[in-house]
Length: 424
Ligand code: 2PG
Ligand code: MG
Image 1 (cartoon, rainbow, N blue to C red):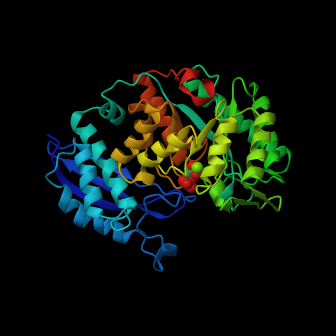
Image 2 (cartoon, rainbow, N blue to C red):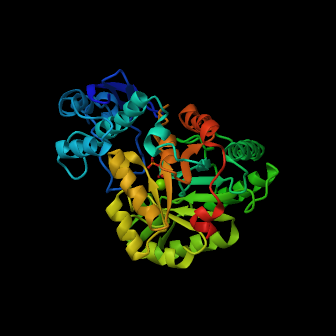
Image 3 (cartoon, rainbow, N blue to C red):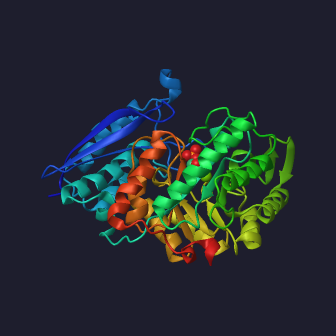
């Protein structure tokens, strides 16, 4: 019923207007699944690498070689395999590529194929993907983490911090979390317009950060929550992705906005000060991917009360997650399937975190499409958090809206606060 019959690669376009890879798989019995590779801008050095043509076409971002890999080598290896055996398919993809970072066939070719296989299996079974992945055991929806201001590499480095986000931690359910976030997003837009700072949006749909300091963005975020008629710190909390690898390495950090340089301790102190002054419950990549000592020190100082997410440092890699757990660096992992390259590897990183009582946040990339696979992963794996970007632009809204559809079957309830690292 689920024997792979055909594998087809298609060139489609992402939210930055760049080419990307869509794979379509057909299995015996007629089930068809397709998935599209997303793309990061602030990538960790340990991620699976996309295969880009690197020639004159589309700034070197074209994917004809990756598509040729899907239609050629990958199709040849996968036709005849059982799509329902995701692990066997993923192992075949890993072996076929043969490199540690999937650079030969391309992380983009491999992740689109790996996800398409899961979709084809679900289609053959006649159930939604979340159900097919988790045997339908999901009973809660993940808590949305939603960007209000974009920054860093997603906004021409206008401010240093990459994502200023909110989480409707006091919301009754998933639907209410979206309602509250919509109110905050609208209120932020109005405040930006009133302050003559409304200049459009950044890569993930958050408002363009026309601020003089990083703190000014935090102040405006708190005011936006209040202006939406919600209580900061009780109903709606703040979550930041510092993405520190983008402005520092070897323990030296250059805050472009303020024109000053900080060492690892200095950056930590600045962030710990923010934790005192603002209702922040989650901080991603507070220090650079190579600053493990800094991550350990920051986790020791703040890990009891806030979630500390490793993105560039852990790159959705189970071994790295286990090493982070051992060292006490971070207490949560960001799970991006294309950082790992295959669904099985992403799931292994997710499982390693959950087994240790860590948080796990299933995440989109800054370059996205209408593909909604990550919503199904978060629900099907019984994940507790989902990060998709802002509350605008349809590559983001497609995912929040898919969550509303899934919630009609799963129920809209959110996980209890004890499920989160900041709630224990
Ligand atoms: C991140 C992501 C999403 P990118 O850093 O967490 O915000 O960005 O996809 O550019 O790596
Ligand atoms: Mg990040």
